[in-house]
Each structure stands twice: as C-alpha cells, then as structure tokens.
Length: 152
Figure 1 (cartoon, one colour):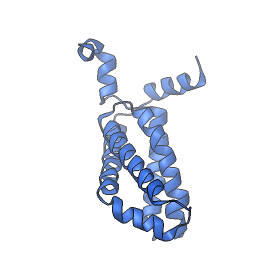
Figure 2 (figure 1 turned 135 degrees about the horizontal axis):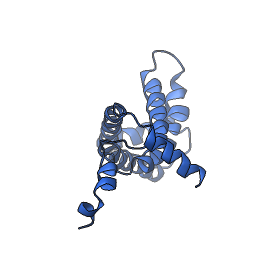
Figure 3 (figure 1 turned 60 degrees about the horizontal axis):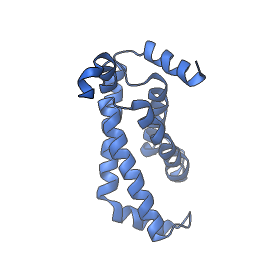
Figure 4 (figure 1 turned 90 degrees about the vertical axis):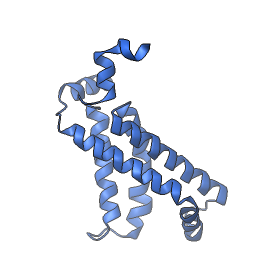
C-alpha cells in the first residue's frame, strides 16, 4: 500500500458527516467564482493587460481566464456533488495558490483584504478535502455502495 493509498484510506475512515455540508458549500462557492470569471472575461482580461505585471499577451490572458473559469465551473460542480472530489480539489489547488500569492497578496496583507482571507480559507479547505475525500453523502460513496446501478 503506497503512502497516497494510506492517506486516502485514513481520510475515508475518519470523515465526519458534517464535513459534507462544508464540502457542498465549498463547491458552490468555487462554482459561483467560475461563473463570475466566465461572465466577466473581458473586464478581467483588460485588468490583467493594464497591470502588465506578468507580461501576458491578450491571447495568453484570455486563454488563462478561460482555463481557470472552466476548472472552477467543473471542479466546483464535482466538489458539490462529491464526484471525483480528491481530483477536483487537486486541480483547484494551483489556481488558489496563484490567487493567494500573486493576485490577492499584492493588494496587501491586512484584515480588510477579504478576498485574500477567502482565498486562504478555500485553499485550506481544498487541501482538507484532498485528504479526507468526499464523505458519506456523495456520488462517490453511492458508486462504492451500488456499483451495478452506474454501469448499466
């Protein structure tokens, strides 16, 4: 048994049911952030190009925003449903790391920077659900209990 399998097994055994409520809220929050990114792509692209901190071209900033928006939409939906939760959390973590260190931290590390604190909390919750998994009230658990239903 590898280290990752041991961590997954420990997370499956020690998952509290109340964590499912937090997982669902986290998934909805990430999904809504994806909707906000996709609906404001033009404004966000202009903001990235105005700051020109990272030297992105118009195409690269548009591509990056579309990728981040898509990952937030699909990953948030999967986390909400409890479908491939660990994978969905892992693909969100690099985006949140960039949000914390490159986007929100540049605005200052203060109590008034709510977006920074929200990004840190979401990042920590993603790491938590990467370890503990989806929980008893999830599609993953339903597939483990009754695999015949999903194969037909």
